[in-house]
Amino acid sequence: MQGLDPVGLVQNLRILRLVQISATVATIYDHSILFDQEVELIWKRPGIIAKIFFLLTRYCGDCLIVTITTLLFTKANTAIVSHSRLLILMWATTIPAWVVQVIMQFRVYAMYNRAKWVLAFTFTCFITQMAAASAFFVLDLVFPRPLPDGVTFAAGESSLEKERRH
Image 1 (cartoon, rainbow, N blue to C red):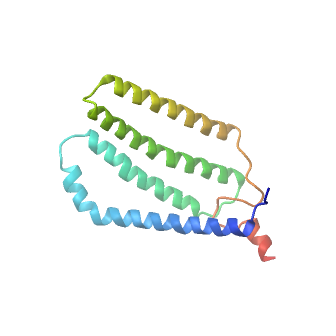
Image 2 (cartoon, rainbow, N blue to C red):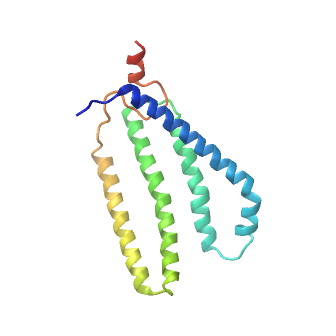
Image 3 (tube, one colour):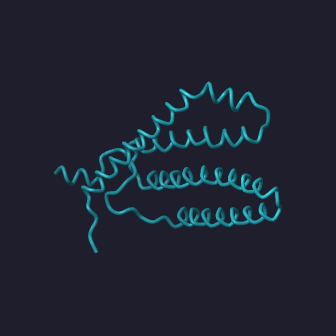
């Protein structure tokens, strides 16, 4: 079994941060240049359900992206903060996926001519998936796994970087 490569880990974390900030900037830029079309095609049309799902996927997703990026670039280095960040990252990727799954359930329901059995089946599978994911998250919250020595989720200099420098 090979050991943990500290230099490679630090390089991968830096690349992750660059990718995250790039995705955040691209998302905000996309929303800014398409806002006039969004107003015309979404907000001026009748109906509320599609607007709610659009709001959840478009703007709540943006809030999550900005939150994740902010957490990735803050300087706090305690184990509690690192664990909290990990939980936020887990939930921040899970909740938008669940919103999209609900939208897909409505689409499948419509494709099957609004057959109640299809809605019941997809809803049952969805609730089962949500319960399983939530159980894993709660178990991780109650029984957190320790991070390897020197590994944090903060943007500050890690102990691995300090050791390599000295």
